[in-house]
Length: 83
Image (cartoon, rainbow, N blue to C red; front, side, top):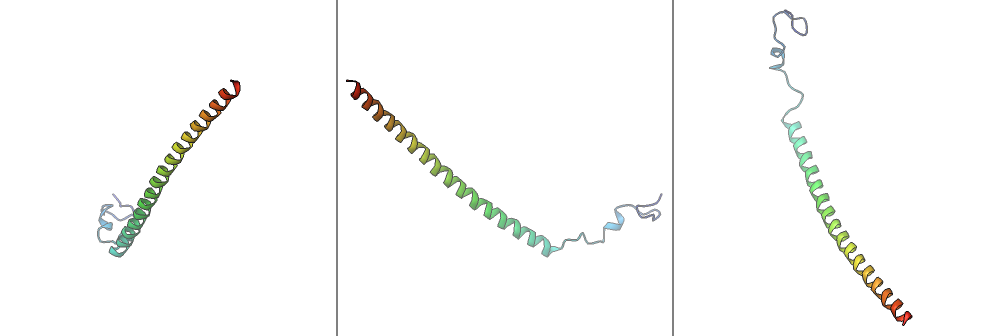
């Protein structure tokens, strides 16, 4: 039976054993370095996101408290006006 290129008796994998896969040590090191940088940036963004989330939660709670106080003042003012 012929192989993928018409070579008789040659297994499909045999031709690839001695060939370079297109990436050398330097390429893998560069990719790893870039992935490390991306990971570091994502960690930094996650920290900023967590900080912003905490600040927004504080703001939300502050606004709720202010609204409750305002509603209480309106309630007191309207009850004073009816007496």
